[in-house]
Image (cartoon, rainbow, N blue to C red; front, top):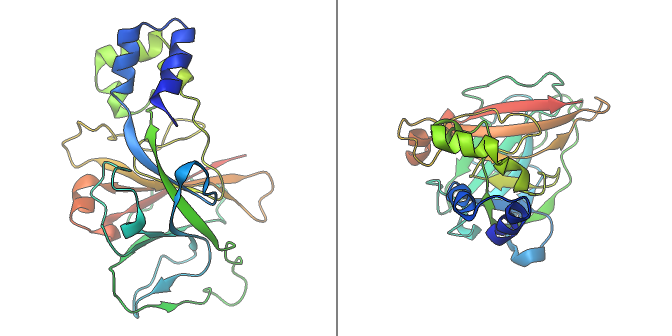
Length: 256
């Protein structure tokens, strides 16, 4: 949601009691939205698409394309509830060719952190020339938004009373957040999906080292007419805290 007051106003119009609205808003999490527009106070914080710049000897997952390069030092300090690095760059890679999707790929080498000051070189596209062309490079601008859970998130499912209120008052219907666009990336918060999100364990009360959303985007799939890919990069909270991005997994849901 762009503004908690917008949610409050929408819920009031549907007759949701004030104390229930307060309860719902306590579930929100900070999230960083990176888009190619500098509207709404966005600050330059990375690049969408282009070719990856990596240290010598560092490779990414086979068949994956670079989606975004994020400048960690430029991110809003209040934009997420995750222990992300405060410097260097995070590179996110995804598959734009698999129309099936919905497969959890652990050890995917789909997220790489390059510490600040590390010498890098720009890499050419892999393969024999049959690979997809790189996504057009565009500057990404970051801003902080509030992320609201879906009815399938642990923040809702783990508490019987919250689950009851969420269903009785249809609390998810009042969050008119904009869908993730094809030229944007979100960091942290709750996963957004036209269907149920692919992960649980996104509750801020989760103490099990469970999976959390690291980032997500949406991609057109060239050569697969009418199909959209929604990659989600997820990682266990304890691995993220340790800076072990090799433990990140890639889940891609596809919609026709």
